[in-house]
Length: 190
Image 1 (cartoon, one colour):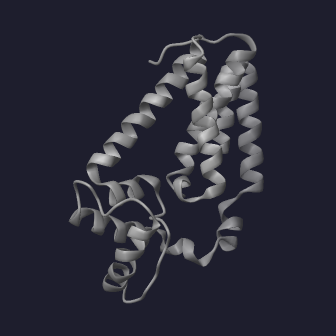
Image 2: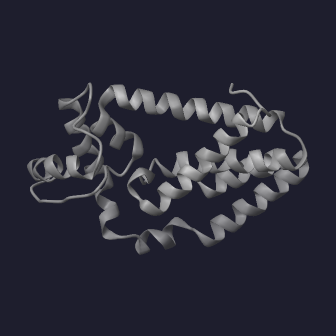
């Protein structure tokens, strides 16, 4: 998420040749520092359960497709451990489904997930539109905001930010920044 967010900022704020050089250097640095054969052994043992956690949550979503079981930790706590045990023969409780979209689907059903995705896409389109229209320092700030939105979206595929108090604050600052730039009269939503 950080790499792609940085890519968005660099792409919006520099010339193409400089962009390519920065992306190439960042990619080489990332591969040198974050080789999967090195960091996989350092990950927590619970990471191996991610696919089983998502499968368990999706099985709950199938039973409650329209409105879900209710969004939030307490609703998952009520249903998740017994279902995980029924599927895998052991008890496990996680406060989330290891993926924001799966979490939305199990918690809010198809209705809530479609509305959340619609709002997210509308917000992203508005931020992209604002970035394309802005000039100078405002363009770089708008690109930073768009980059942050992209980073949050990508991070959400592996960790739901709506359950982390530290991430929720960042999420709402970014969303507030996008909404503020649109309401300031400098741009219209796409």
